[in-house]
Amino acid sequence: MNIGIIGAGHIGSALAGRLTSLGHSVYIANSRGPETLTDLAQKTGATPVTAQEAARHADLIVVTIPLKSIPDLPQDLFEGVSADVPVIDTSNYYPLLRDGQLPELETGDLTESEWVQQHLGRPVLKVFNNIFAANLANNGQPAGTPGRIALLVAGDEAAAKQQAMALVEELGFDAVDGGSLHESWRQQPGTPLYCTDLSADEVRQHLASMGTQRTPEQHAQFAANQAASEKQLEAQGVKL
Image 1 (tube, rainbow, N blue to C red):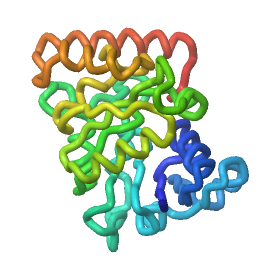
Image 2 (image 1 turned 180 degrees about the horizontal axis):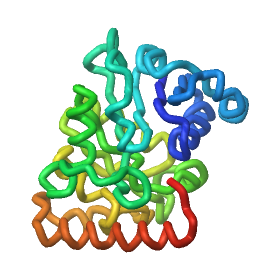
Image 3 (image 1 turned 135 degrees about the vertical axis):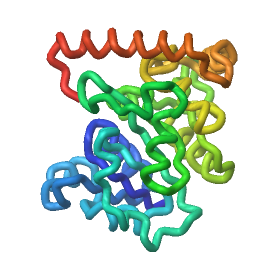
Image 4 (image 1 turned 90 degrees about the horizontal axis):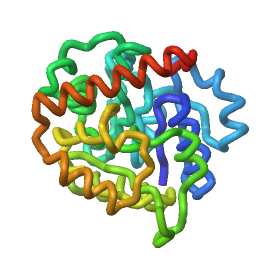
């Protein structure tokens, strides 16, 4: 399969290496131009291209850039790209460390990926946002392995969701249906399913306990959890 990755940060680089190792043709882009991706290309086997080329080459597109940079993507990014090509969004909202406050995301009415979908003008799936890049690169296991890490796939397009879930399984993780894109708040930062590397059964238990409609109390609690986590990362000098 031809896979376009827009963003060459931690998650984009990890996916590029794993996907090429599985035999996929990977086209990767960043905001600085393909000439800056020579080292990554040598390391992963991915082909450096522009963002538009990454999208137009692809049978599946992964957008993995800082949330605040989504509005800066080229306006013609999806020109000539078939409407049935799935688009995966991996972004997370980090208001303290990186993104600044985005008022649309502060109320809890809109999920991160719904905001991304509005800006891209294309349906998106939320995947790969709630696992550390090193674990994505190194901790995949064969199907049936006890304790195999489960990854959520949230979205509204059934066929696209099936393609994304198949890719998750191929990478060595149990794919769990995370519900609609509006329900993808359950895998955002601050929740029990954010970067906790749980099994499929554990993930489903948490999904059931959280429900499908985010309450104001849940929004406040998860935001507080995230703020505490970001302050801790800031104290440690971590850059996102």
